[in-house]
Image (tube, rainbow, N blue to C red; front, side):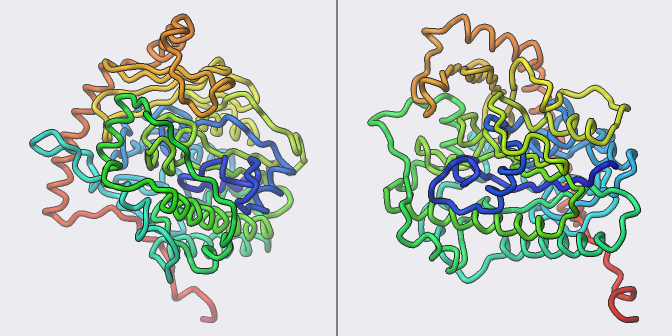
Length: 467
């Protein structure tokens, strides 16, 4: 029988900061248990270290630049088939609850039902424009990574959002438990542990007295052009990365990781036995590593994502897959599981087929040139078009401190060739610039017209409860 599929997506979850990936302090018993009965991928990479393009990419199995989804105000075109379209045609009931960063009037993209609105705007509010002096508009995220914007609080709208996401997911699973007419594909997507790093007192107290590691910095840090642009946009020079501040940041983050783990546990208690469960995130978060915050770079803390698959028949239980994979590979893997033969060209391959290298990209938002990553075996190569390049030996230098591009020219050239074989940086730069101009014009017109695309969930109260 075709299995149900539960896909749990978190936001900015660093895999290293979970018990399932070996962290000795962070409490994630439910993810630990899922990994124990599933397959843990130890080198899963986001195709794009930014929220909306990352989701658009893994839902389509295609690189986001191939359809112009460059930033958090770029639409996923409605004529791009998604996993939800494919599984709908395979006989699944496709349902989404939570965050998916769909921009534009199409807020379903193949899902039959959507149980909540999104937490962020569905319009082009965040088009990445620059001011007349060429400075990035918006940003300053680093201020949210230090107290007083980090720590315990009574409540936040973001906690309210994830509570609604969870309520709708559990309600759906309880309803589906009564009878099964068709398999379901349920996506449950949380905001956390994405900033703001504000936690309830109970979650804050959970790590009282815990041994909380903080980043250690050398006397000088070598930054690439991509890093410098991110630091400029995030205003990292304006905050103090003291041990006290970093410890508060990590403590709050630990609490939010435990928060989403508890949500996972509630879902696992209700899913039917014939369900393939997948747990992942769109990307990670630098969390002060290298004195950097947020995502928007290709270092491991930003570009890596947790990925665990637990099959209902127990295949691969407790195993670890060490070879690099991409979140693009989720779509073809699930099409294989569902027995879908009809599929259009895509960049992802099955998680179990292997690939020569994992590629990732990042453009437009708070960078001034197209940026790319290639990971093959022990090597990770970063190419910032027209600016600089980095090469790291992750076996010898897992912290990515030593750029060995000058010593390993052949490796760098091979990986750069793989990037340029798949991507045209000049065309991406031109298309990204034109896209920003178009969308900024539309944004201003929509603002004047009062046009909003935010999703309104449909609930008919006249048919609820006792009528």
